[in-house]
Length: 112
Image (cartoon, rainbow, N blue to C red; front, side, top):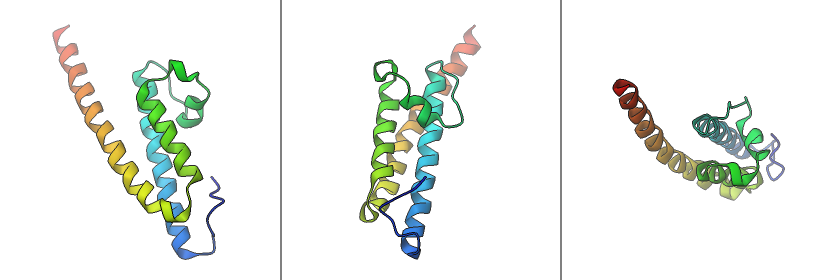
């Protein structure tokens, strides 16, 4: 992943790039979870996989993840920290969704 708007020789920019790479990794993780929830076997690069699926076939959450991913890869250095922390909050909401989904799945298994 190349962040063309960053100076790789600037230590502050290197730190921002590391944060953005972690952000992309987190987005990929949640994209894979939503693909799996949708019945699609996720590939290692779930973001690229989802980009190749017709948007009309994707869950709204995946569309939001892809939109956030596009912001991250195109961001400027002065936006990086806000995107890093904002994405953490954005993805935290998905943890709530998946915890609820997993609980319901366990209840359903117990009743069958």
